[in-house]
Image (spheres, helix red, strand yellow):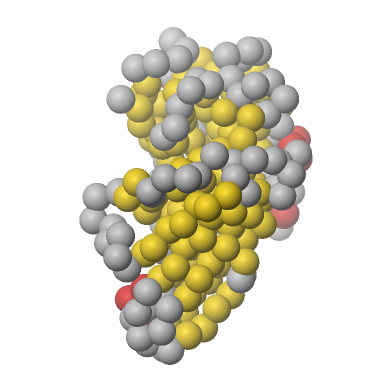
Length: 118
Length: 114
């Protein structure tokens, strides 16, 4: 089945630094990937839709200059949190849209990245 | 427009008893529906999906769900809960086959009591 690898799983950084999170589709090509943020005991909040070869589409209220998304290839999307601050500390999850055996439109998720900004 | 409502934010069952997690959806189009499970500090794992084929869908780990169009429901069930089932469960809807937007429920936290 489809596998999405997300790296790093945990990262701790100092306030003001930038952090990059990678999301790779390992055995399929993903023209569309999604980035989510999840607060404790809450559902996933969609941040942006990443489209290969074009600019990401950001959800309302998400700062695109703070959360830079690049989808340069069919198997890799990256999220860079620029000038991170403690309020950016969160669990970030990526997913990729794949097509199952039935031809169905399915989301496959990465394992998530826990960002802690000191 | 599409949306998902998970009717219970928290469900608690005893080990070995049945599990019922409720999900109602709203969709202007023919929907695809999914249940995902999330264990602490992990990503989401697909349990099962409905994509306009059989209305009773069997998933992994003994879970199944039934698509009921008349009730706009897609409830998740399991005959006998196991301790390892304790996790957060999300119901998700998208437009069948062509949807690029996936709508998440708020999640149901399942506790299994030994």
